[in-house]
Length: 62
Image 1 (cartoon, rainbow, N blue to C red):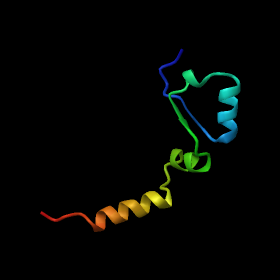
Image 2: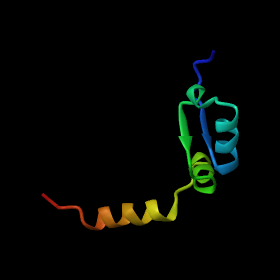
Image 3: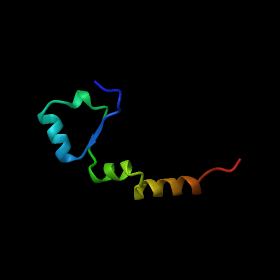
């Protein structure tokens, strides 16, 4: 038992989680392998950057 927030992601990892029936012990499971790791590294995904740019350009000025 731990108070740590447990995360896992990626196809091979998900297969192991299913094989060993440990999904209930993991707080967040991502199906994205490379994208998931990129986010964990603190980097911005290109699609997220594009959405943020779009939102910023379309903000309504009061």
